View 1 (spheres, one colour):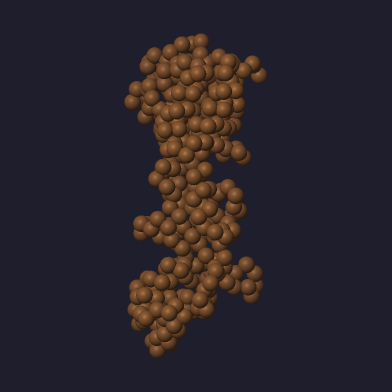
View 2 (cartoon, rainbow, N blue to C red):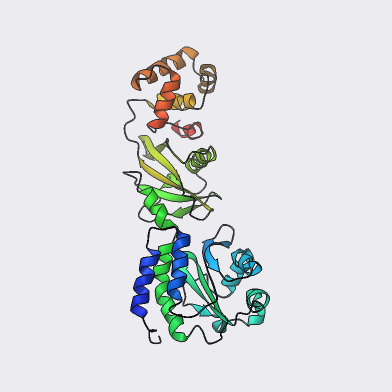
Amino acid sequence: MTGLPAGAAEIAAETDRVVSSPTDIEERVAELFTVLRRLMPFQAGTLHLLDPEHRGFTAVGGFGYPEAAAAYQRGAEHYREMELLGMDRDRPPMRVRDAPVPLAELVSWTTHFAPAGFREGIGVGLFAVGGRHVGILSLHTDSAEHPTDEVRDFLGLLAPVIAEGVDPMRSIVTLSRIVAGATAGVVLTRAGNTLELAGLPDHPVLRTGSPVLGAAAESLAEGEPHSAFLCPYSPGAGNRGFLRVSVLACPDHVPAYLRAVVLVSPSGDLHGLTRRELEILGMLIEGWSNQRIADTLVIAQRTVAAHIEHILAKLAAPSRTLAAVRAVRLGLYLPRSLTRSIR
């Protein structure tokens, strides 16, 4: 490794302060560019967060690029180029002159950056602890003399700090702490996939394609920013019970492909409701009539009426409508899509 550039300690401290501040990410990135200008002169820069489901990037700050070049950097072709250069792996920053392939083979350089007057540039891969790809920081200059070896190596030292500061999972982890007692959790993407949630383990009911994630997606589709429902869970023979599932929509400032946090916690107080009563209560919440409930469960209407009477008493509700409202608020909703596992 080469020596450190002048003012390295101060720049490192300032970088940490900027990316760790509670301001919006666009403000932090804009201030980050100001700090990095103390390292090297550059005429254009951008910071993109990875969008793995669309094999592209989401810009969270940038300036100095023609619109066509800026659009290219967000697209799938640029994503493929990053793979070609090996920048989808945690490795040192790469200058244009360090590229492992001829520049003539790089559309970004021949079609966009060189025609715009840039003579050098550097790409810094941003990776979270554990190797998860967060995004990429790009800086371009009209001088072939920058960045120097010292700057390249120092940017490599700053990369983990920047990655941690701009990682969208940071705010998502904070969001997950709203639910006290959560024992497992995942991040649900818009494509229905799941991502690890730092600090919490996975759980069998949260695996990609599970009915629980389907129920979570349905609640989000109804426009609910947060919801909770019960999930039948039998960890072993003769050990039947419930888990509580909490669904928290991701905040607007995170990349669009991240949809929600889905957390699992103990069921809590079920207010003495039996499994059958919880099943019927779920149907009431979904607006089912007594006749439809009786036909579906193959029981008499008077049996349904008796169950509903018990439900109203246990929830201290004077009507089925109020019982449904109270049950949703208490997280006692058992979606019909999950009740098949009761039998």
